[in-house]
Length: 142
Image (tube, rainbow, N blue to C red; front, side, top):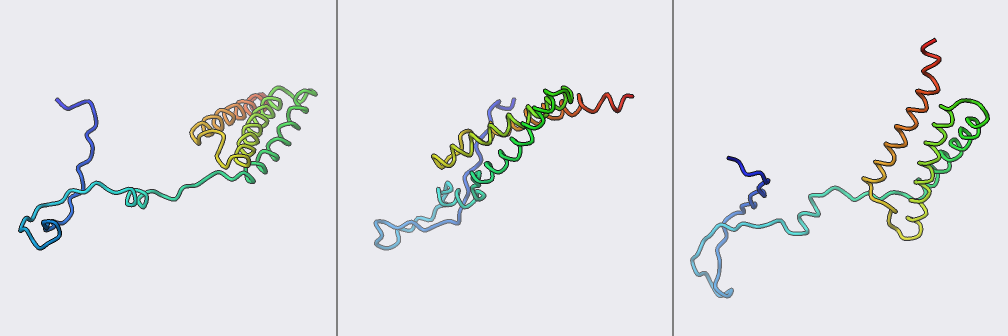
């Protein structure tokens, strides 16, 4: 029966080294050395860290915000529920990006983790696609 937990990987086996006694000559012991990667080695194995840009987030928030507010106004004036929903999705994501950009400017760190930003972004994208479907499906059916 296999264990339900994942075993840790075996340590890296390096070339055998000759140990010395207090640095004064050879004591004659040859043994394999198992080394755990050091912090330096583990950093070198990772890709470069990327940080979100406050300026890019501000530009994207401005573009999405303007388009979102325009769609909200047009949807409220009678262009349809689909236009209003797409404007709502763009405005929500623009507000999240603006919050993140201002937090980066203030502290140097993003306001929330990349995973949370991805979840919010996908939720806004789903809302936007729903708005497009509400807006366009009646035209396609007829």
